[in-house]
Image 1 (cartoon, rainbow, N blue to C red):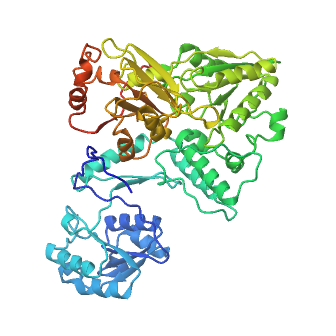
Image 2 (image 1 turned 90 degrees about the vertical axis):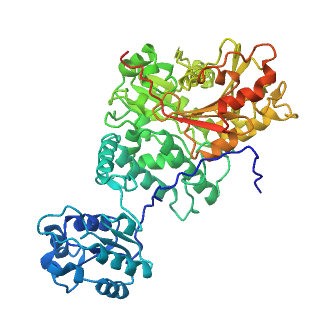
Image 3 (image 1 turned 180 degrees about the horizontal axis):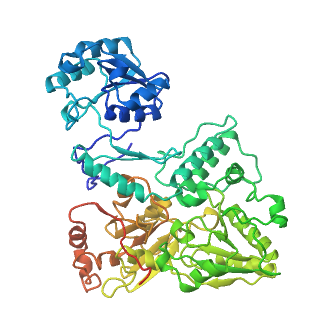
Length: 601
């Protein structure tokens, strides 16, 4: 049972929206269209693509319809019914014809009336308002949803301005809720122009991957609608034990969710059947044996691991990609990626915008650090790097942020050194510093924060970590902790932390910020207090990895008119008023988007 917090606030209901649904036709379900013009043809095309049967009812039958409807009739794509009313007296085509059709064709699920359109041509006869009302009454009496063009009050549903990416399952739709179809179409066109080129193909490949993940009679599992984040903590895989069918199915679907969130569109679009099997496999990277032997160089795939050797002995670079925006790459990192790399072994958190600067002929492999497989994936990547260097390749291990800040760089340096290889470490911009600043939060600020501390939300092999205790003058930055927010909040605030906190508890009114996808266009910042942040995160839908947590009074220092008085003598007594003023009577605040652009400056 959930107990409502007396101070909790949730998203305000803004009435007037549409309930947007995506209908898929069941077997032998039909759509009835009253009309014969180009709009009727457009409605018919949409219904046919959704696999509905289509029935056109119009006075005069086939002889009266537009060229496209006649063409589709000749191809047996739809059926035309002559309503036996004189075309010149459309108003006399009363509700009886519609009622008879609905009673005879019980498969009809939706009705469109298009011959009410405004601004028709000189030969177009427009149905009267009274006639449309009679039709609406017939449909309503039979509980069949109806759409009557240009009469929004007589519509049970509307069709948004839609676009389907050719040859793929991807569709986009925009609705203005009746406030202007032309501007809706304009917005749709502009959105379509911004769709990544490979997005449609990526959707198609992921559909195949999901079907493959549930193959062989495995238990049904889904990667959508059940978790706010694909990073929900799970135990490490039991690589020495046999998986049950259920465990295998759940694990594979979780991995599908991971690549849906992290892999670039181009990588997803380029997935082959063999690549899909490799993604879902529990054993190795799935690189073909002949590829590892270097017998047949490949240059046509960003997923293969073989390119022509550049020298008798290769090199390894460990580089950081910064918080995400390619404009925050160091010059050294950009040069290595664009001029020296033969093979890039990338962590899954590196965004597509950074991967996009890598030349197309360079092989790119993304780490399979999926839930329960982090340790195994780490070993795979290190082994792959050593093998590639032995074949003369220059290998770049591309990590998020700075490679030494929770980037496992130490393990990799020692692993390579034990095999006679000296890796070159190239510093990057740490997301622990840049991420908060992209959200308007300095980690130190005179009068608000004299120091900061960075920690991880999860230890080695998923173990708990010891968090620092509360110090008013210190900012706490937690990386990789959003998926464990409930446990972290308990550790920070409980009076008995069971050894998981080193110091006093944090007050419940301490400011906290969750920063997701820092520096990217879809950055989101949720600010609240320790008391309310869990509800804030849950109420704002799907999480957007990667995310970080910032706790401390520096969050207030640059908000609005700013607050540099946190560390003044006696200021602690005013914290309640300070927090109330900052939150404006709300329990949390959400800020979407980021406009910064450092490239070309």
